[in-house]
Length: 112
Image 1 (tube, rainbow, N blue to C red):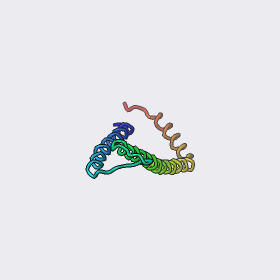
Image 2 (cartoon, helix red, strand yellow; image 1 turned 135 degrees about the vertical axis):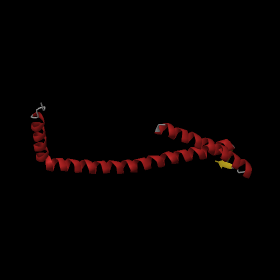
Image 3 (cartoon, helix red, strand yellow; image 1 turned 45 degrees about the vertical axis):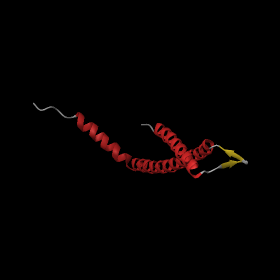
Image 4 (cartoon, rainbow, N blue to C red; image 1 turned 120 degrees about the vertical axis):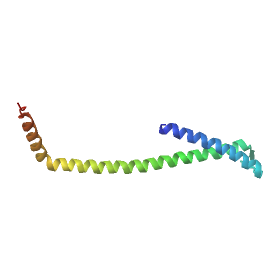
């Protein structure tokens, strides 16, 4: 399953579970939520909380992915730089080894 599909399913599941449990808690404990001196319905109160949580989850995911992406990018840069350094230092040896290999493989005769 792709990452975006998994993320979308997780967000939908979070919204659904938040709505179900939030509406139940609001009904059980008789909680009233007011906004600008106006009573919000339980569905609206839960949906505001669920959307806030989803925004926080997406922001946290972006931060985590950017941090790990940066670490992976830095590691790849270090290994790439080391590879280029080795190639730059040992290119004459690699060139001579390739020339010897090319000359020696073409001179073989099959046995009679």
